[in-house]
Length: 290
Image (tube, rainbow, N blue to C red; front, side, top):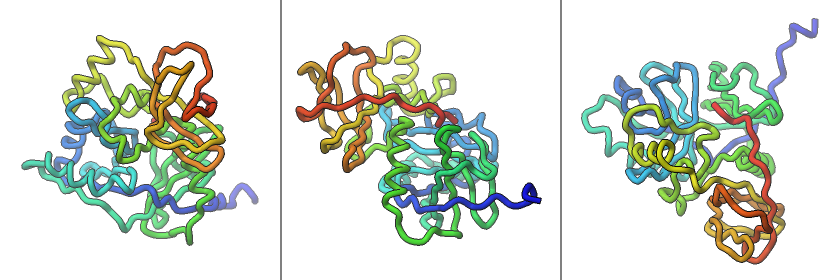
């Protein structure tokens, strides 16, 4: 009898720092494939992937989850503070292509620390009135994300939202603040771990830089996950043996403070410090690959 009972819905809470942008129209897929760094042409309807938009110098100006909900409809899940500027910039490249690019403020994004009811890995699930469901975690750290206009969780839950952001950082997901847009290549942000870019597909903005680094060069910098009991700010310098080795690119506090920093891929052992205070490097968790 118990086997026939429906699985209870885990507690949902709002994720107000995220927003949704829609690309709709006959040319939406062609446009996305030509502009974004990952291979959207090979993505099936009903699946999602990590993706990025780069400037001509191969620097990341937006990171997002790209969700293909239909043959002529793509949703992008990205930082709310980035959404309006991203849409305005992206529209400049539409030219005569048949598509619209709009933010969807009516959609609500919610999360839960539980395995999804139906979604798994890159496969999304349409939960009808509850909206779209995405698998945003791993077997060891399950998370469910839902996008929809109904079943909005009531109120704010700062504790749960901070816990969600901390796990993003532990996975090596660099949600960059505005000051960091256009500063780092995908490899420097270790976006190959997700992966959020392709070195096999055709041209897209910054593709030559990305491909040259992959095929001819060597990745000299990478993302590191740091923790400290003392305040840390974006832009702070990471020091090792009194040598400046890197920069903090995103952070969450208060204590313990967590940060992601770009540092040398090859570095000597030694104590790390930020602002004269010791920090600990933690391993980046696997499992968010899509």
